Length: 138
Image (cartoon, rainbow, N blue to C red; front, side, top):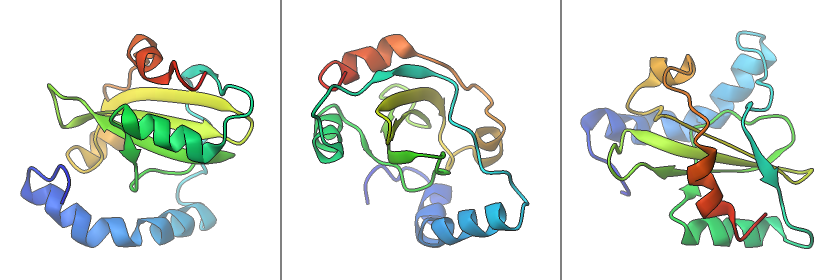
C-alpha cells in the first residue's frame, strides 16, 4: 500500500477511505458542513486543447497521485496530491476545475493530522513549487 508509514494511516486507508465519498455527500446534504468554495490559491489556467486525462498523466509524471480523501470543490474535475519528500505528513494538493482553473496549496495530510487539516493549520500557497510541476499544463 503506497505511502503508509503509520498505524493511523493504515486505519484511515481501511476504514475511512472506502466510505469517504458517502460521508462527504451526507454531511454536505444534511448541512453539517457547508460545501466548500474553491480553495484560494489560483495557480493559473490549463493550456488550450489539453484533456483532463492528459493533465492527469502529466501530473503523475511529476509525482502526483489521485487524492481519495478530499472534499470536492464546486466544478472540480481532478484532485491530486504529492507528498513532501522531507516531511511526508505534509502534501502539495492540486485541483483542476472544469473551466480550466488550476488551484493548489500545501497542507498537512488528512490521515496524519485530521483536525489540523480540517482547520487549515499550516495551509500555504507555495505557488513557486507548483510552477515547476505545472509548466507542462499551463
